[in-house]
Image (cartoon, rainbow, N blue to C red; front, side, top):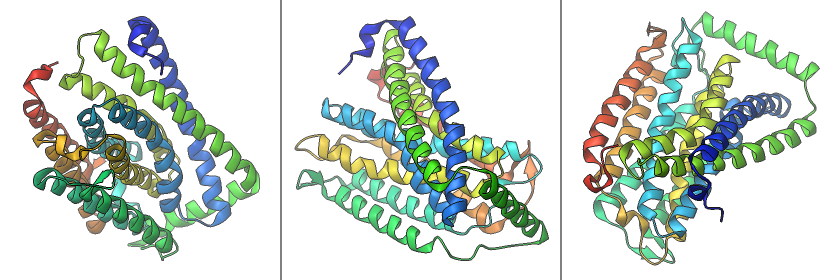
Length: 356
């Protein structure tokens, strides 16, 4: 395996910049292909957002986390995985600004996103239980992680069966939006790629995102080490930002294109996959259950993720189209909770890791 720390700071910075630009452009393209696939197959934006966008953009994190676990640093692997979940939800609040005069949760007609959020909260609850109670290794993985894997499989099965349920329409404004999205879909069908071409293009673009995303996370870690940030709080945040760039690209592109359901499903889908990856981290970590290395820091990171998800959950139910600073009240609350949570996490960090 290539030692990125041995490449030097400036070369790592150059690779990081190039990988970031590549991920952003690839994210724009794969969002377009996802829309074509959704239109031509009749599969809803919610399920496409979970399986295609969420699955692809979360694979670089899997590669980094598993490699860290194999190297004997299961704590770092768990930390990076849980630390990025709340950050990815905060991206939705920033994407809300792109809508401008409307709150993001007021223009999402598909109730499946609530189902996704509910399963995500359930998985996070299992993770917190494993930290608080402790885990017992069974067949190369912790017992709680086996439960996590089973619930993940159940959630994907339920989501696949729920994709054709009727969307809710709260008022005339949403009806107009649905008609506009339908007209846009017809334009895509008439002038866009064929389903086969879109599928192969999405696969190729996904491979680019996976490769560039992996380079992002590895070079970010090397940069943190070279600059002296190391395993400090700031160093971990830098890695979390790097691994969240694929999600940022696809979410902002989807929001700008008016694919609001796909944007939220992308984040919730990524979160579902990221949480399921804790099972693979556990398997790769060796004899002991990996979650036994987690503590207050990881537990509180998971609680932040539950809180910001619950806030959007409330916004989806209430559907109040009121904004502040060009974002919905719920998005504003999510940003406030996330930033306050970062302050708490700073004081919960391992004192031996440095303040950054």
